Length: 195
Image (cartoon, rainbow, N blue to C red; front, side, top):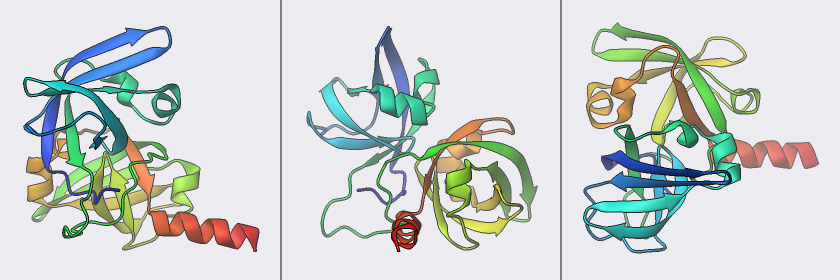
């Protein structure tokens, strides 16, 4: 379980690709990772399989590659990182499972007063769960939906701190981003569909 509060940015230093395999090696400031730790990389929950010298390695399995943009990462790409929530810590964002629902596309990005407004076209199943002032995770960052622009597009306000401390400050129109819908909305939808 995560909160969507990015605690560091890492850098991909290696991507081992095979016919049915992807392993990413990421440089990070975390010096106390252990094999088996869960870590969110751009919002996708992955397991540390090795670590040494300021880097860690994760395997990205086929189901994760199919729902995320992790397969497109290459050496030099920066990623948002968050360690798993520890019991007793403050919950600054919202409950984020690290189970990416799909990829969205940035279709608008513009400054307004002291913020940037980012418009994101969502996958249909995520759009159906999105509400004004509801929570959403974009590349692992806990954000609030400012407005619904149409049946598939949301507007999100980004504060200067978020732009400076996450990879969202590097994004541009046309970029694809990993999206996780609010967990509570998923449970409500499932209960209503069964009812």
